[in-house]
Length: 426
Image (cartoon, rainbow, N blue to C red; front, side):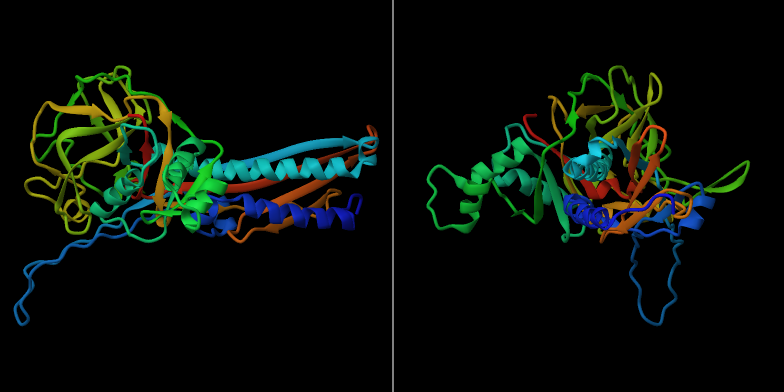
């Protein structure tokens, strides 16, 4: 082979992989779906992943006919191997005299690729998470996190494997609450908070500190925007469907989103969080109203009066279909053709994300790099199935060696109603 890795380089790559795996903090706390790479290539790197069924029960007396059998609608969302990240660098034959430099560059490449994966997961939760908890004050109280626990519990989100990633300032604010002004040494929880600014498990969430976090701008849409929630045929009565028929036949439908018409979208922006007057969240299993207004996110602004939101408003009003009854997520207690929209992100703030493991999913990909084409190739896989590929090529004319480290993966938020954002100083 024209190029090959030395034993020292292979050992260094193994060390890099170990460090890479340690740096994948967020990816360890989401579900993983291994795909067939041949099938993904033939499907344009997209696969439809199922969402959980939600069933309805009826009263039945043994020995009597069941009054009616329901149709079950299977919802699915598209997941794509959409992230192809590369860190390329080159070294001259003079620079290679210092082998330490090569190791530092590899460490930097590993760090950046791990960061790319963590950021992709965080962005998926931050942009689509529809459970919104605005806090008026700065971070610093157990009750702040407990509200995130409450909004999940009220809407039937599984109460296990819940995670929260906070910005450094907000995380440290919670740590400060654990320390307290009248603390006494010897308490393991407060000692760790004092010594290492460590929070750990709070209100059912395993918490993590982020050294980077998205910022959500203050909503500028104003307080006079309204939406029609009246009547069974309005946009407050979205009907979930597994497929729809087009010119090309049946195609899958992504039911995470709904395009709605409002009085105006002037200054409304993607990411804005809002509530609708008279539209209350329900428990997804029991369908009972929680007494709390349902929260929504703006995904895109499409025209002067239309925007795409998540989740869809499934009110199951009047004569509802089986799918509407199964996936009902709101109770329209006060129908109105001019229901007021209230934005929740009133001030610019760091976005803290929380989720249940099954809400977010990572899809590891794989490159078919030939190992006999004159380029040295090493590949390895993390516990989550994420593959790192390192290649080396020597150019005899310039006496330089080119390196590149690659990874291919996808991230999908399968259920925005099982993930959300926590905003302070609102």
